[in-house]
Image 1 (tube, rainbow, N blue to C red):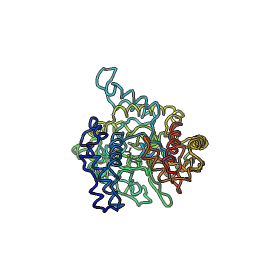
Image 2 (cartoon, rainbow, N blue to C red):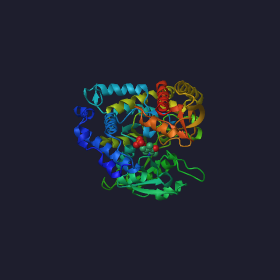
Image 3 (cartoon, helix red, strand yellow):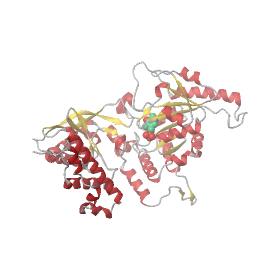
Image 4 (cartoon, protein in one colour):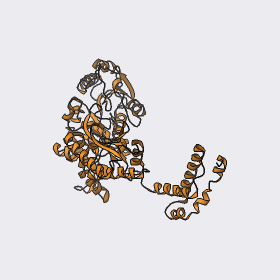
Length: 492
Ligand SMILES: *Cc1c(COP(=O)(O)O)cnc(C)c1O
């Protein structure tokens, strides 16, 4: 057996590999430094393999093949279409909501050529990009005014910066939410220069806790929807209606004390107390199928007296990534003038997709049918079962019965996206039990070896393809093809 030293010495130089014809061919379409980078990485990988397993150098030819594979991989897109067979509907890692056809068409139209993004055809002069969705948002939520920005995190930052910066905002200890991706309410408040005043206990907060905490510096009663968790047992939280009453009482007191216009300088004048809800998922329709655990609607929060409500465009709404703020006109007008709005504004493609998605909501029955997220959330289990049966038949037609045992099982889908955490959504999945190979290596194949990765669930050494989140028959075909391909890579 060759010594470790000899094996490592046998490795070629970077320059030697760069002279290979097959590798040189890429010099026309790639920077030399990028090719050298891939050669170095492949050499390093081989060096580690030799050290770890005490083996011989794999040979120049094998190394050349690996370098070529690396170069090919580096040239293929990084952001790819993916197939979601995980059963998590608003899957943040997979891009949250798939858009409705109508939204896609509007997006393409806006992107392909010029548009009236900031052009008013009546006056033939500059218009506002905020105008496109505002009226629809008002109609759908009952708000006086609305503004859409880059995402809900941006909306929260904007609202805090405008109304609570340098002042105090009161929030319940039970609502100090962390959303995935390191978005934490306490950190965001610190970042926007708002002093956070926590009230209540983790499990219980009472109206009197807020009442006691209100002082002259208080500028906001903040309510944060516990999107991705629920507290059960000995718990209590204070609703929007009660926060409204507290804010009204304090605002009346301040008015009586300081007068409408204020006797001090405008800058340090005590502001009014605002009721703001970060609603997170932001539902327009009350989904009765989720019973008591259905998410509250935006309209309900406004009706109960919130001055401002913000929510995401791509969670339960089923549109593009956006952060939508709705509420009273005078507050939204102030937000529109905040310099941050320019930094957080939406691009034309998103605006077009958002407007088209909102339009579908004008007819709720149509929204449920055409917006993929809503359809998946509400589709009856029987319909999902039929999709699972079609997938099962496709897989059976392509996978040898000696390779796997295939069946349909009832399972649970999830809302995902930090919404509906308590809702078990009844679903059907195709279950693959491996007679050759195994679930882990198959899962690796489906994720790493496909142009469009397929994301399934693993359970007890079996692979589950949840039919609820599979978008169409073509995706089902691809899943069947990928499984057949996996078994063909196994040695007899
Ligand atoms: C999801 C969520 C956010 C962040 O929204 P993005 O649109 O992802 O930026 C903020 N607050 C709450 C309560 C949420 O659920």
